[in-house]
Image (cartoon, rainbow, N blue to C red):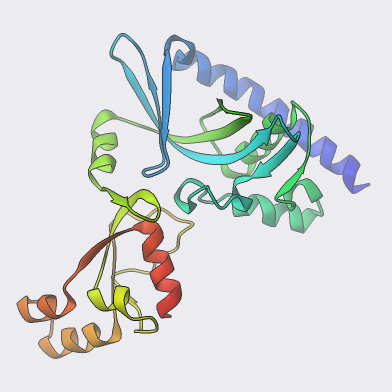
Length: 247
C-alpha cells in the first residue's frame, strides 16, 4: 500500500514540476545561454551567454543519478556534497520516514532514467523552488533546484566572502580564535547560534572559554581581548568541524 501511495505522491509532484519548469525555462530564456557553471563554495549556479549576459541562482543540490550503476544518490548521503549546498535536504528524508516512503530514506537506491527528475520534483514540492536543472558530469547526471535569483552585485558579494581551504577547497569565510584551532575541547562561544543547515545573514564568529573570560574581564572586544584571541580565518566547513570538537 505504501508503494502505491508513494507512486501517487511522486506523480503529483511531477505534475507540479512540469509547468513550473516550463515557465522557468521560458521566462529566463535558459536555452539561449551557452555555458553553465556551479560553485559549491558559495552555492551559486551561473548561466553565461556569449552575448556577455549572466544569470545567477542560489541552489540546492538534490542528488545524482549514475548511468554506470543505474542508482540514485541523495545529496544528504554524499560526503562530497558540502552542507552549504544541501541546506534543508534532510527535510525530504524526515518526510520519507514519517510516511514510510523508502526511496526518500535510502541514501542510495536503484532507479532508471526518470528517477532523477522524480526525486527533483519531490524536492521542489517539499523545499520550494523557482526552477530546476540537470547537468552531466562524467557518468553522472546531477540535479539542482534553484531557490533564488541573484543580481550581479549579490553574486560578487558572495564571491568576496569566499575563502580557499586546503581541506575543503573553498567555502564561506568564518572567524575563530587561535585556541579553537590549536586545542580540542576548549569550549565554544559564538556571536549567534549557528546551524550548518541554514544560511546565516552574517559571518560565523566563535571563540573559546579563555577568550570569553578575557572578553568579560575587559568588558568588550578591545585591543587586549582581540590580541589574546588572535583571530584566524577558516572556511565554513572547518568552522562546524571545530564547533563539534569543542562543545
